[in-house]
Amino acid sequence: MNMTQRLCELCDISFEEIEDIKHSTRNRNENRVLAMLGEVLESYADFTPTRIDAEDIYALTLNKLPPRYVQKITFIMNEPVSDELIREKIREAVAIVRSRPH
Image (cartoon, rainbow, N blue to C red; front, side):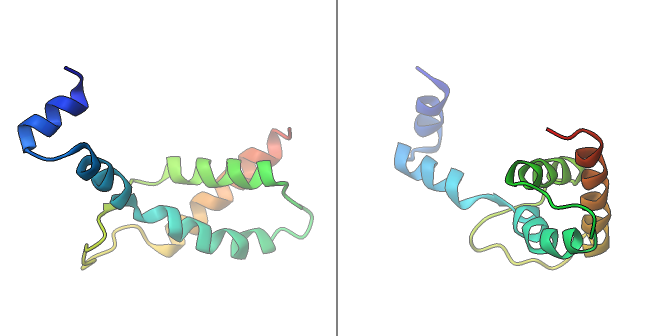
């Protein structure tokens, strides 16, 4: 019995319900980073990132932030990751990507 089958048995739920759990749980910072990425990149007049650069900056930024997992119906009462922290981590990621071009 694999781990997914075991979870289905333990929780008395179907495989489809497990898939729904997986797809309805998201890292809240993903959308926040994407929303601020263009704003921060605009401040670099001498840098025109490629798609790969943008993907690298996005991934590096997310790796530098604590994950904030939420479900579809989560009510956010307190956001410990500030917008300024996200901008700072994006700038750090830009510096790394610029120092190691593809």
